[in-house]
Structures are given as C-alpha cells and as structure tokens.
Length: 125
Image (cartoon, rainbow, N blue to C red; front, side, top):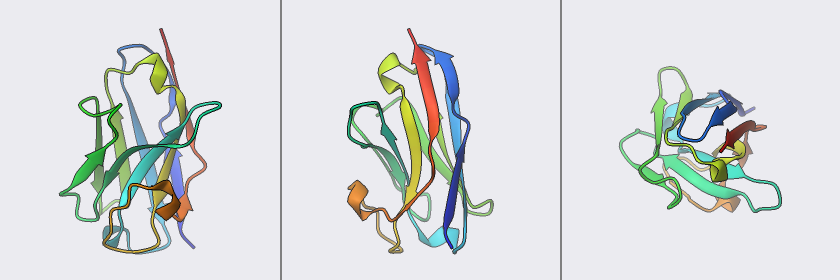
C-alpha cells in the first residue's frame, strides 16, 4: 500500500522560507515521479512542482518558478520542496503526490493516483 506523508508546513511572514518533506512507502521510490500541488480555499488544486524518478529533471508552475526548488533523496524515500521568498498568495494546503505509472512525469493532477493528506502553509503580509 502506497503511503505519502507530508511534514514541514507552518506559518511564516512574507519573504520567509519553509521546507516541506514527503516521506513515501509501499513501493520502489526511485521508479516514480514525485510532485507537489497546492489548494487555497475556494480554488482548484494547482500544480506546483514535479521531479522525475532519477532527480535529474524537474518542472515548476509559473507562479513558483525561481522561488521554489523540488528535490528528492531516493535512498531516504523522501521528496522535498524548498520554498523561498514566500508570498501571501502562496498560502494553501500543500499536497505530495505520485502517479501509479513508473517513469512518467505528468503535470495534470488527474494523472496522480497517490496523495498525502496535506500540510498547511500560511504566509502573512
């Protein structure tokens, strides 16, 4: 059974930083893309970033490009999201996700089959 567990959320002031972690279990971690999505109240779930199985290739949503960095440690079965230069509009619940198919890098949330429960990030002005 695949499980994804996020941690590291919290409250910060604008301009601050947070690092989210996603611990995965239940299958061979190094075969699957890991991604982060976020959902603010009243809005659709939004793609934030994805990193391919090897860690070589990563992709970002336009709103976080240049401020956020996704990474992974395949030996530790963990993915990370380093968030710098946080803005109030980054406030949302952040979800870790992974597809059921190996060796693909989807960006559409409908192609992700496994999700964590989310961690709240709140950025104050």
